[in-house]
Figure: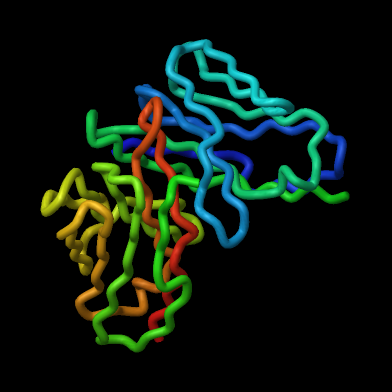
Amino acid sequence: TQLLEQSPQFLSIQEGENLTVYCNSSSVFSSLQWYRQEPGEGPVLLVTVVTGGEVKKLKRLTFQFGDARKDSSLHITAAQPGDTGLYLCAESYGGATNKLIFGTGTLLAVQP
Amino acid sequence: DAGITQSPRHKVTETGTPVTLRCHQTENHRYMYWYRQDPGHGLRLIHYSYGVKDTDKGEVSDGYSVSRSKTEDFLLTLESATSSQTSVYFCAIRTGPGEKLFFGSGTQLSVL
């Protein structure tokens, strides 16, 4: 079974700081999704990366997929309190069934 | 909003009692999923469905059963609840371009 490791587990920063969280795998990803989850809610998809070396931007969030497709990172520039939440990476498996295996997440707290 | 509703949102029950959680969607999507979320484990797939009366097991299916008699409803049943099944349960549907997953708001289940 694919193992997705996320780091760090917890991150507490001040508003305006930059940060990076990581997702690593024991084997090659087919594709990778990043989700953000707020307290009391389900995860919400942020982005899907498919191609090795791919970079996607979503406002202040930059997602990178490693060249070898075994790792990915999420960089947030000038973090805001609204960025607070649990960030999860997930890999799709099972072909057409599109089942997901999730990492354990990075809990981010941005202090005003 | 993908039109997905979970009920109940919170439930407390006793060990050994049966429990049924409901996931309802309004848009006739074919694929539906049940995940549980626990600290240190992320989200793990319990069961999924790819059509009416078509279901299959996920990675943590022991102690759970599912049914899908109508496209819009996917039920998760704990036949005899145990304390290890205390968790937050999320339903998801697959929809939209790129086969995105949309998650419900979750059911917090406590088994005492």
